[in-house]
Length: 90
Image 1 (cartoon, one colour):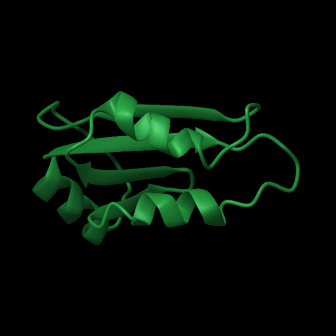
Image 2 (image 1 turned 120 degrees about the vertical axis):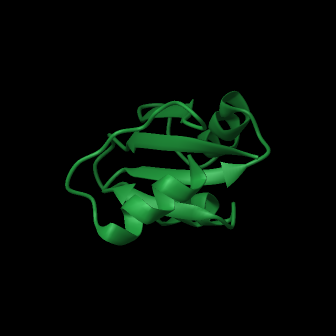
C-alpha cells in the first residue's frame, strides 16, 4: 500500500467538485489535507491514480499525483487530526 497525494485545480467556471471528490473518497482510506489536496491509501501507482481521476475532470483542469510514502513529509498549520493521519500513512 502507498499513500498518494492528489492536488487539483478545476479551471472551468462552474465546475462541480462532487464527482471527483466522490471518486477520491472511494479509495476508502483518505484525508482531505487542503482545499484542493487529498491523500489516499491505495495499491495503485501515481499514474494509475491519475488515470482514474482524469475520468472525473475536464481537459482544462490541472492534476498532480505523487507517492508520498516514506518521502519525509513536512507540514505546518494542519489540524491535529490531519497531522495524525499523515503521520500514520506516510
